[in-house]
Structures are given as structure tokens and as C-alpha cells.
Amino acid sequence: MTVAIISVIVIFILSAIFTLWLAGKSDREYRKSSKKNTINLTLIYVVTIGLSLVALAVYIRWYS
Picture 1 (cartoon, rainbow, N blue to C red):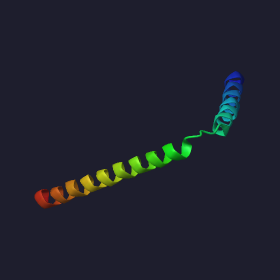
Picture 2: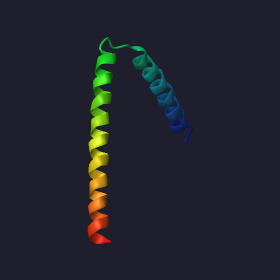
Picture 3: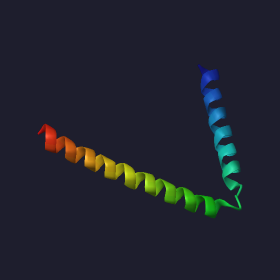
Picture 4: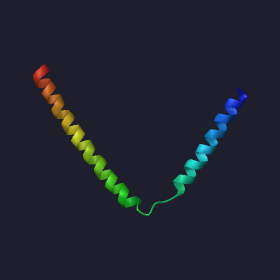
């Protein structure tokens, strides 16, 4: 049991260190790619919400 607890603590500490280490690296194209990703995700959400509202309206109209 003690070995398992120590293993979990060591893995937690190593994962925190490596996460912070990787997060510290910057990407030169980050702003451009993040802007593009934000626009793409927004369009996906708009289309999905729109289709969901249409599906809900059809359901309410035909099955209520």
C-alpha cells in the first residue's frame, strides 16, 4: 500500500513538472492558429445550435 501511494505521488509530481515545462514553451504561430481555431469552433457551435433548434421545433410541431 505504501509503495502504491508513493508511486501516485511521484507520478503526480512528475506530471505537474512536465506539464509546466511544456506550457512554458511558446509557439510563434500561436495567435494565428488560435484565432483560426476559435473561428472554426464558433462556426461549429452556431451550426450545431441552429440545427438543434430546428430539430426541437420539428419535434414539438409533429410529436406534441
